[in-house]
Length: 343
Image 1 (cartoon, rainbow, N blue to C red):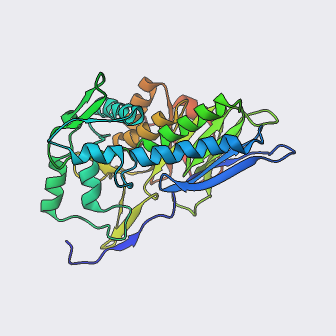
Image 2: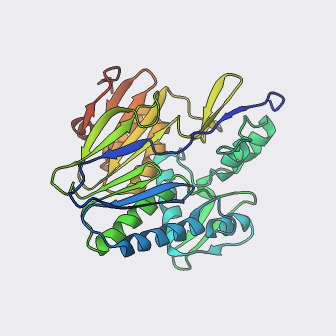
C-alpha cells in the first residue's frame, strides 16, 4: 500500500466552532498563543488585568509539557516508555485525565481508548507522512490498543501499561481538561464573562456582558472554515465539535480522517460528518464527542442522555439528529441541513 504516494491534506486548525458576541464598550482583554499544538485564545469581557491571562497561559503551557504526546519527555511519555516494565508515578493532572479516559473507555465499550497511541503512530496522522499503514504494521498496532491493560494505583498515584509497546494518548481529552482548568483559574480571579477558545474547544463562561446567552456558531463540515450550519445559544457551557474535516489526508482518491475506530484500526466510517457536544464540563464534551461520533446517532443519543449532556449529530447527507436540549438551543442558518427524528 505504500507504493502509491499519499496526497496529504492535514487541516489547518481545529477552530471549527466560533463565538459571536457583542462586546462591551471598553472592549475585551484578549490573548492568543500557540500551545497544546493549536492556537489558543482567551477573551475576558469583564476584567482588564493582564495578570489573569498570564496565569492562564502559564497553566496551559504546564499542561502541554505534562500531557502532550507531541512533547518529548512529558509525564505521559514516561508512562509509555516504561510500558511492560514498571509503574510510573505521575502528577495529579496526568492521573486525572487518564482516569477519565479509562472511564470513557468503559462506558463506550472501548470505542474511546486512551491506549490508542500505537494506532495513531502507525497512521502518522497529523504529519506529512500520513498514509494507510501496511497490514502487518496495522495488526501490530491494533494488538497494543486495550484500555484494560492500564493499571491505575490511586494511593501511589502511578500508572502502569502492562505490555511493551503500549502508548497512552491524551489527545482526545487534553484540550477539554485545559479549558476546564482555564475556567477554574478565571473564576478564582473573579471573572464571570469570558470566551475560552482552545483550538475550537469553546467554553462560553457566564453570559454576555450586556446580558443574554453567548451565540456559538457550529461549523458547516462541507464549507470553508468559519461557515456555519447553525448557531447555539448557551450560558456557562462548553461547545466542542469533532469532525472528519479536522485532520485528514487523501490517498487513492479516498479521504482518511483522524477519528479512529479501535474495532477496525481504520477511521470511523458511519455516514457522520460531525458531532457537537454541549456540556457543563469541557473534558466531557471533548471525550464524549469522539465517543458519540464512533457510536453514531442511534446509540450515541442514548449515551448522551445517560450522561446528562446534549449532542448534535451531522450526517454527510445533511440530516441532523439531536438531543431534545440541543434541538432547543440550535437555530439552523443553512437550509440544506434538516432535523431528522428517525432516532
